[in-house]
Figure 1 (cartoon, rainbow, N blue to C red):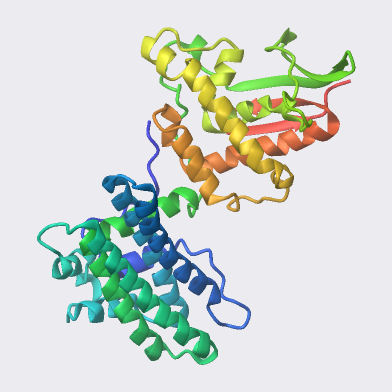
Figure 2 (figure 1 turned 60 degrees about the vertical axis):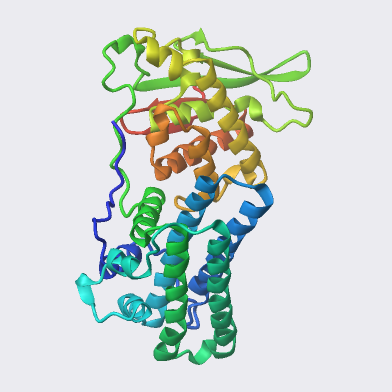
Length: 396
């Protein structure tokens, strides 16, 4: 069963409704001085990201569809920071949009669609036209930056709104040149943010093999796996067993400079416990769903196993430079890393897993890994029903 985000933006999204929903996702604090430098930094940064997308289009000769998709995502991010600046400064987003569109419509009747229509073009112009619109938008933002840098301590709401109006107008013009509906960009942005930072956690999607007919091919809902390091011929090896049966082959780091990757199977167990997905764990415990030929080949086969192993290595290389994620709290794991993870597994059943759930699986796995790294042994406890993985000292 596919996971559904808790936020589904309504059709014909009003500007007021968007502002309220976006406000609910805000994780940016005001500075101690009462200014709003943090949302401003994001606002300016996203303007740069829009230009960066144009640069990459020229430099890398990206396909047009990919380029327009990138611009649409950056527009959504820019709009979110725009609304944060409005909130922090006491400016009403609806007022800015209405004045940018020169319309008297206000309140719940002012929708992104109604404003889009005023800026709409009969057909999508050449890409160079969009690039010029983006440069014009950046110019407006640049003027705002200059003004803010000189007036940040006494920035009046009315003066701020006056600078935001031409930026919003340029944003709508850029969207029209790209054939982007601002409502779609806004809704997709909200979905993305709630997918990463939901207002509540704990409502887990159904386990991927929950409805599988053959119960003997489901991942075990509860497991205890014994992991310990032993030395053979002067070299450390990791051995694993479950119910007195050995699991897999003894593992080494398989790299020139030792880095404890020999304990990495705990990441696979974490994916199984929290995501309900792990082709590697299925292979280790001989639980491939062979009664269903398509699942056996496409979800549990060699390619899926390689994908999971590659994913674990990619995350490990990232985590290694960050003390194996020690001190990284829930909600703090890199958004870019999590988006890369989703791209990595696209085409497989786990692509439906929300990003916050991936974060929980990764952080839980690394908590166990750090313990194994220090103690060189441990008893891994997997409880898929509770979406939990823990580690205890090996019984003596």
